[in-house]
Amino acid sequence: MDRIAQLHSRLQLTLTALMAVLVIWALVCALRGRVGQSYIGSLWVAQLLIVAQCALGALLLARNLALAGPLALHIIYGAVAVLLLPGVIAYNRGRTGRGEALMFATICLLLLVVVARAYETAR
Image (cartoon, rainbow, N blue to C red):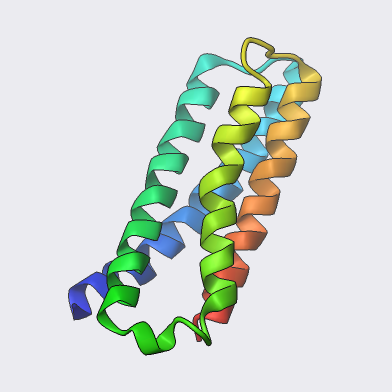
């Protein structure tokens, strides 16, 4: 289980870097006035990594259920992270304008904050 905990910790760093890149990329898309399919694909890759992070967290939590109380906020952050991106992608389905790019930038910035806060609540 120590390997799972280490992977869970390292994946958090990967998600932090990816979300920062996605924020910058979305701002560039907003300047260009449209969101490309490659950006949407990158959002789905980020979503898969978030789901993997939550699955690893669930495995760690199942190992030690006594931590569920103190880590309640950590668990809430995980649930928010899993639901946020698919919701925004579904809301913007088919639209690729400047407004959607700014919305993606905002959501990725919010997810960057959520990932950072989840890390802090796990300490």
